[in-house]
Length: 151
View 1 (tube, rainbow, N blue to C red):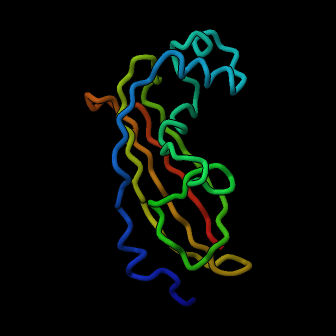
View 2: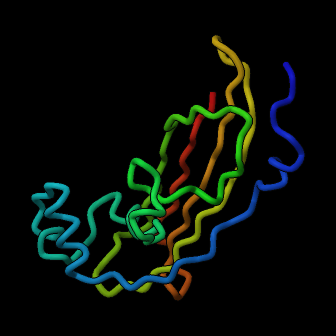
């Protein structure tokens, strides 16, 4: 198999986006709970954030004309890959404790790994990213590892 990943692409492993610092409000939790159809009182009252709440907090807020067609900002963490068709792979989230109203969080996303494999229909490139969410005091809140597959 021909190597698709250049040394320049592999050198990106380990780099991270700037850490985001956010304060979670009760209203943010309530809006997310309502918009995702939550029914648990703790979510609707804004006491505790439902699962996946952190996803929106880790996205950069940009004007509409700077977003991709799907409404998401361009992913500047992932280098340009030689294979262009990207698909969602897996997502694994480890929750250490709930996100609560009033939490001051630090959110860091880094490029964990990039590697290639030979699939049945040709080469594949796997891109692993990790999001680490902690309180400002350094208490772990969650770790999320996701993969994208390029073919």
